Image (cartoon, rainbow, N blue to C red):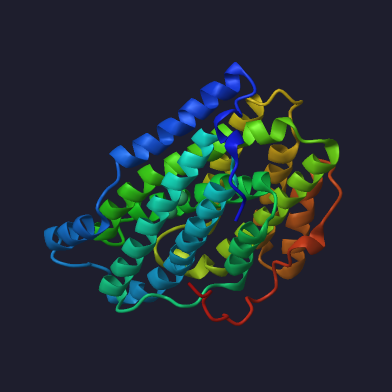
Length: 330
Ligand SMILES: [Fe+2]
Ligand SMILES: [Fe+2]
């Protein structure tokens, strides 16, 4: 926990910063105005639809996909609480505090829904997803934490929410996820507003570390999506499409981020874009490239199309997922 800081009130270095902190204060107030009662909303949706309506053959896939979501909500809760403690400027601190309140609600509502719909809450997490969440939880650097959680993990979660909602796997869940999506959009907003303030003051070494962290998170995100490929397909979702949508959202966010940053345009967004394409081509190839060598070729082609040095060892698309570890402790 950080010590008490009286600087909290005096940290807007410019009029632009002051505007950003005002918007972040607005995120807190909006969070309070739009806070929904998770117990009441879930109970009323269950009553409206006569209970959860997940077909028996989809309960397993739903549990496994939502294992990452459930434990991701806990990670988001812990990370936003870390941010609320460590961020100094008042507006950003308020927005992070509001997010912690939202994530607590998300965690218990997803938990209660899964118990009602599938009989239990998942206590296992795919290794890649666990590595992803732990990497952001354990990151010491505030900019890395914000980038990893608010701009990479939360945009991907939003993409999965949207897909599951549109496929109407369960009408209760489809309506419930609308509430989540509105909250998550505010959380992405915190990253968008505060990250440029942090990025602006980065030196070359710091920015290189930041880029490396972004790529690491991308590898873990893709590994997590790959591990749940079969379950996503069972729910009617195309993993590659999820990755593409997630990528477009991340890129839009990066564009916004760098457009508002006074430093020269960063290569982070471009690198992530090419990296995602390269790995996706290898992981979810077209029919003609389903053999291992075909996968390797697809990976190298996509990655080299930008003339970027190959990093084929960064992810092995032929590897099997490791045995599932026990769930992280609360
Ligand atoms: Fe959440
Ligand atoms: Fe969130």
